[in-house]
Length: 204
Ligand SMILES: [Zn+2]
Image 1 (spheres, rainbow, N blue to C red):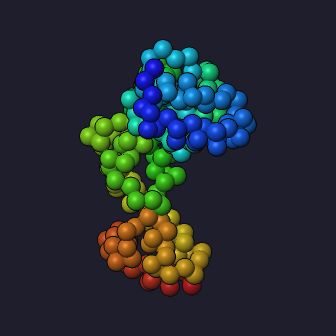
Image 2 (cartoon, rainbow, N blue to C red):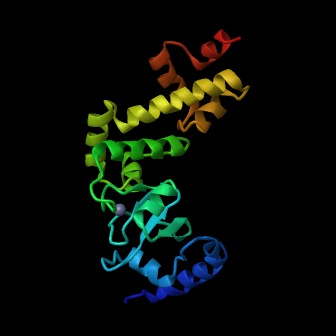
Image 3 (cartoon, rainbow, N blue to C red):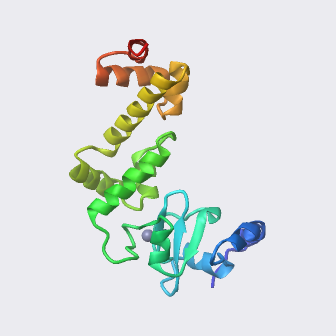
């Protein structure tokens, strides 16, 4: 097994640091299992889930390398599913994953991460597909591009904050994931034919 020597010590330190939390988990993420994951070993007898995306994979999957801290080990696919993880579209640990399942997975990812700055390539990397395929499949299944879905989601969250809080327009814009308040106002006006301020006043 090839272990780059530069990484080895930092991996070992990280492993030691994580040992406490790993003990809480059902199956430990041993150094051997970790190496199987990062080298896409096809001869493995487990699955791994990534807690930030709630997607699980075979170690052989060529999806982007997870952060070690976010990895949970499973022996059976149904353990992963009952822990709330969905099968990866790319390596299909449960057999075939339909486009509908995949789009549900992408929507769940967007619903949990809309506050962050997201690009099509980030979304694709996190949801285990190519940007082109993700965009095409998402549009075919939902009628919207991932960008449109994300904008709708952000606008709806902003309306809730406008109605229920005294936060400034700028804080709301940033909190729901828009890059600036001016951009937020532009998009809001285009969609609802009024400014966030007038929407807020209307509710009083
Ligand atoms: Zn996978």
